[in-house]
Image (tube, rainbow, N blue to C red; front, side, top):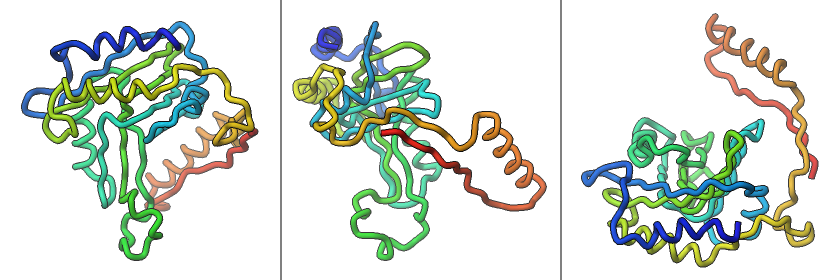
Length: 231
């Protein structure tokens, strides 16, 4: 990873914005990325970083794994996730390939704020974050990327300001995905995972729920299964 940021650094010093998603009347997003021959484990890279916020995402099969540092854009709401939130996310992303927001929403958004735990107050109802710097594994490829967002509704007013903040954040990053010794890890490393249901069993269980909902047996269901992690 040591040499990977160099092409991105050159793009961040450009005097003007290259082509970006969005328009002058709305938010603009530019994803600058370089494909890597070998990125290692994104979790190891994330463990080396000290900046916040930090985010990690992996799908069930680990076909997509993302480690992110910093925030190019953040969408928050005090209530439940609704059409307005999805519209905000879509307005920023446009059709930018491989760019995604990561985050989540609380289950009890209908409960009055005074009845929720005080420690959750800063979270609000939902938070979705577009990483400023990102290491992504997807479909057998590996990508190091930087997201720049500016314009209406964004924290940065111009490409130049967004690029300057990205360069400043870049100076704090550690460009290594070498495994960190276990005693120095902030969180234990996941060595393996085993689901209670196999892929086909899970598919049948989900179909059973869908069939029941279609018949009107129930109006709401929660899909979950037990997952054993080896740390």
